[in-house]
Length: 248
Image (cartoon, rainbow, N blue to C red; front, top):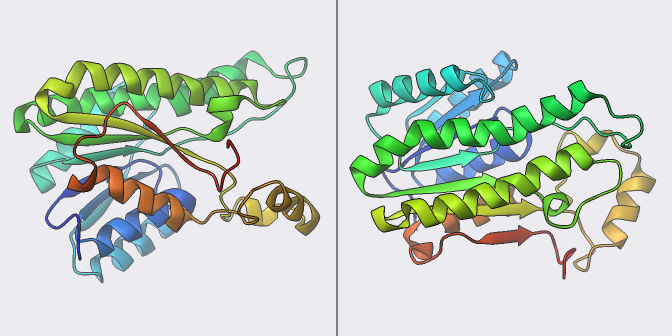
């Protein structure tokens, strides 16, 4: 059963990792997929072809979600090409981890800008369209670190906690127009980035998770499908932890 037939989704930062997984699963559920990437042109082209082979419309746009004007321009281009945006998934994010005593102002500001300001930029950019349509689902990617904090990640934790507060506020503002806004907080998700860690480190992470495994991008994508579809039509302002029980 295709839960997102004829819906159009905009996903930021989807050329690899969790974003790529979300794009693929959404296409399998019949959604037309619009995605952004910053520099991975070849990966973006490959993903575009892969999604189109699943029988949906798909297009990648090189755009910096952290730039307010670029976000506005992106949405204008997407509406010209696809005429609607039903679902927004704010997934773009970076890390610049360090202890507070070593972290630079530049590294703090950059993480806040890419992880948190991008969510403001894109949400504001799609708001008018969703208000006009009188429907929409906005899904913002936080992290278990945004819920509980983590030593050496004060900038990342602050950005991801900020996403939760922002999302709950937007849920309250836009709920009367049938626009929902929810948060997904992934735990230890195994992607190309975690593949660079040593097997001992990964095994340590897995041992501390009640389900005794890392999550996959598909695990996160399936949660996104639920929050994007009519299955969750009475759910807004919530944080869904996709973490194998880490925060239990």
